Image (cartoon, rainbow, N blue to C red; front, side):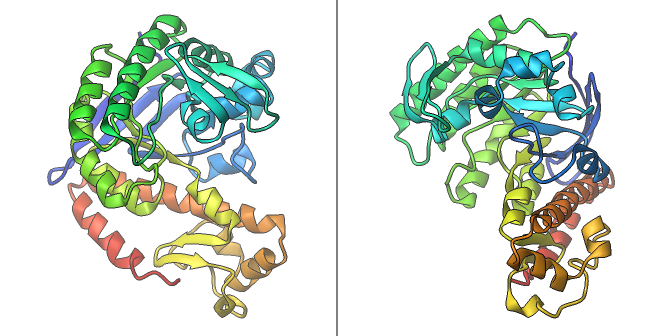
Length: 374
């Protein structure tokens, strides 16, 4: 039996939005869901228990970064990533493929895998499908991802076709190497760039392997959102309805809503903590750039519609002071708010799907959010 099982509870009556439940060895995840990202085994600037208190049911961690530092064997000897980072809920690890192709220097891609130099110290490594699975088995995440090549945008059709065909062959090797199926579920990744026919070809290849779940990769890699939505229109429908669908690397409120509308169940992104470190808050009335002078004597809460710790306890003026003074607490408080904001938004999305009013909720959200303050 697969470690992760998906139950499709309901489909919205007026859209392709889905309400589901993902059952894992370490707990149940209600979908659609946003997964905060703990790249190196931590959500930046936050304690695990604080992230859990915000309502997070699952985190994503990164194979590439944990392999380079501290090393997967360190995590294995610590009892696995859950124990190492003090997180007892589900974890998904990505394959490391995206980071190899976006961060690593002097990479060379062959059928064997991707040879690259570490962005940390320049050391030479080879990440193959088998090595990616070996690392993820050692980390012990509940959901692990197949090693793939994420084609850049823009990319020529021939390059994207060769890339997706190699990715599908790598997936077969990942499945063959992965033996820990009772504790970890392997998801395949659809590629194909911005070419609809290549997306279809990729989907047919990965679905043949009858995996517990599937991801859509190669989007949100620099293309305009309109193109991403156009490609995404058909992607989810190419994947089995009874399996979870994961759109990788997407986390802005609009992209989450548009993904849900197209039948996506899982999302992840570093966005809420990354923009927090730059002084940006997502609020019900749009984004707030807390560094702006207009907030210097604004003693109101960050978002009057939000019930998070930051909004209950601190004023915009104080948050601006922290940011301008380069205090670490600024990033922590803004990250707390941004993660809470997205998690509560997804909770409202689930409730709207259950009530057959997802499209109404989506419009109401946009009407408020598009009146951005900054």
